[in-house]
Length: 277
Image (cartoon, rainbow, N blue to C red; front, side, top):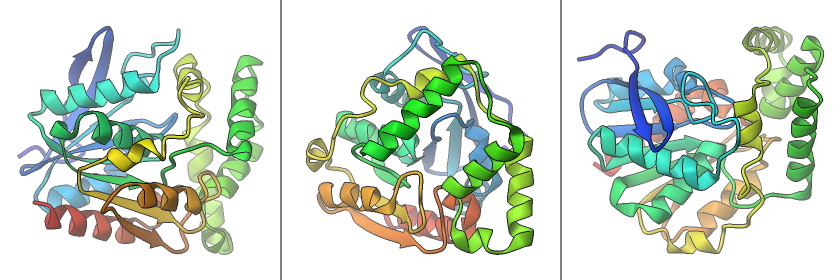
């Protein structure tokens, strides 16, 4: 058995893109899809080890746009990212349970719709099926900063990121707030051409809720009650659109709920996947 934290990367090719993947554990296959600007190793802090302990083989990968996967700086589409995820599942012997957060949740929804043969069950965390005027303005602002070649001052970046992605309950504790500001500051800003390409997906603003009525695979949608980045009503809309889906909401959790409330997220993940084995 391969131990978490001691895995060698595996390269999976989809057309001209190379995707850097890690696989660990033994059991039914779980493929995890991360959100905008984040590497797959973010899953390794909490969800990957919990799933391995529960008897799953867990594959994480860096989406195109995130090194060491292909940066594809000239641009790509959401359909490309869905095809990448399909290629990863096929490489590791799918079908798979697929878990995605944020943009990764959107990718998971589209994959489940387009390739139900590859998806045993889907879990979407902090997800969405449409944009809003506020989301669009925020996204355009991020692109404008990148195009201007500007980073936010580090303390301001950490504060804005914390405010947008963490629960007020977490931030009300001064010690916890300081710890999170340090963690965010240490991680730095993702100001690469690949991240810009992720922010500029041509399908990003499409309303896909009507299309999701055709999703036929078992689905769990998890909303984070204090999510400011993708407000929780957007996750509820996705659950309402998918026939027979299950919806759960985690209190005192922001957009980073899988990091902020890992025990609650892990319990939902393991419990749901176990019910679909």
